[in-house]
Length: 342
Ligand code: FAD
Image 1 (spheres, rainbow, N blue to C red):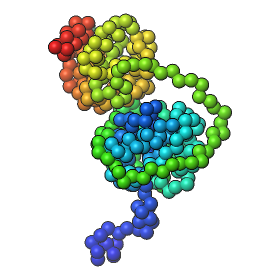
Image 2: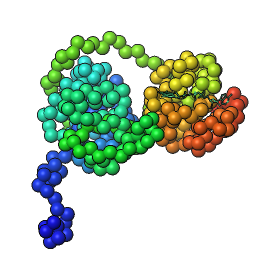
Image 3: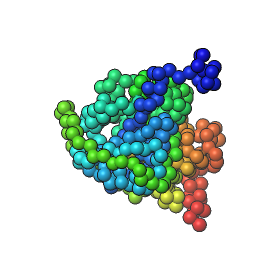
Image 4: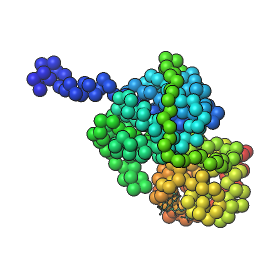
């Protein structure tokens, strides 16, 4: 207190200074098949920058080197200091049992104050395992970073937004990447690329059997700028495809779905948006025959512009919509598609 009065500066304890000097972030960047950097990885780095620490990013898989080069030469991230790459094809599948020992080794061997992953299926699989092995409580689905230990996250399907303070010395976080604008294009030439070695073996008897990929020419749902979503009102698979595809084509949009559409067999479950599906925030979201249940809103309400087409004027989707078209979707959707095409 005395020193504060003399210098006019707030009193800073030695312990605080120590922590500040050593604050640093480890970010896990998910590998891609073609070595490109996904939009969600760019948003993860944007979130990591808000922690105001130097960042080390770890990239795994056979394309890790290519991804690291692409990141370094095409994007600007001032806080990024180092990229550690583990170029091993056995990490291509991001099997959590194989990734976890590697990440735990990195976190134990270095004094990182923060560890961040995307709140994707990979991140959701890895983070609890890392937390259990390090005995740290993860903070999941962070949408705002207020300070290095103060985070905002939705709970109860987004009905409550909680601000929490995390006193743990090491903080491990999963980030809702759709809540953070990606780092901009540019370059980060000064960043060092280091080859990681000694990948710890996976001591669990787990083998990746096969990958079944749904082929689609459309943009990926979580990174698409425009999304057209079909609800239960579309009745069957044929109607779902025939009505939504032309509209999605003219908008270069991805197609999404509600859980009711998935449960009724109108489309694949990889299209589900919501509390138990994907969380997205595109520039344009068109909801076709979607009621707007809270569990669905949890996955799309951060979209920039929401358009709702529904014949029920009291449908809750109209409460979050910027533009509402009240009427029969079987008339409105073809008409809208035609107008947009022209
Ligand atoms: P409905 O609620 O049946 O809405 C159909 C809408 O279409 C209605 O508003 C109706 O007015 C309109 N309509 C009908 N005919 C026409 C027409 N001709 N023209 C125009 N409009 C028309 N749901 C999700 O979406 N994602 C989730 O992740 C999810 N997770 C869940 C988790 C839990 C634990 C639970 C309990 C539920 C979850 N749900 C989820 C389900 C959710 O509660 C709703 O049941 C679901 O979202 C409803 O889907 P829908 O809007 O397609 O169907």
